Image (cartoon, rainbow, N blue to C red; front, side, top):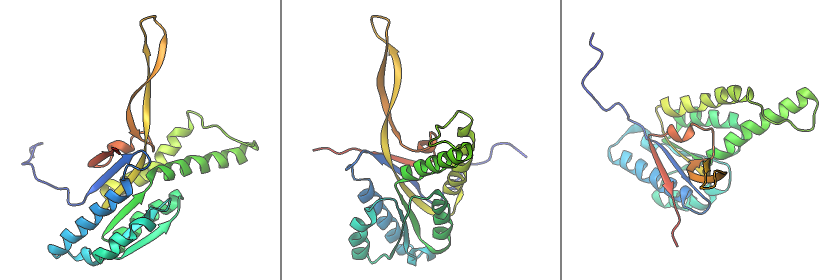
Length: 207
């Protein structure tokens, strides 16, 4: 059998990420995108379009966008939690009973995963705190991979929001001294998370 085959579009579900600093409009944009996608699916008479949108909310974003879903006649189911185990369950539940999953903010789930692991290690070593070591990242990335696998492979539209953070690197100035400078913006989550969405949007607020 030949290695190469004629190209075809095999992506049927949206995997979208939005990152930005506070007040940049991530939650609102994600919600309006979700509403538009469900309305489009209704026009096409796709069966899942009649199911509710699932929103796993680490803050209070769902409270502010609920009127938009009510106006569009789209039921909204909300879970307010930051537990990583709930994030995995949310994908499974939305895949079974929902039309789309909104995650806001993915940054909190990564932080909670790291913090809960640090607390367990502190208890293990009987110390007040535990600072993550190089060898710990293998375990944490493996656990996070359970979510990214579900995010990429699930037959479900998923839109996630993440906080933005600056990337830094050292450069040598004219005097030969090392200086730390901003080099870009990244999503505050596991280091590779920004590469997982098929559509990644950087939100900026202009006044």
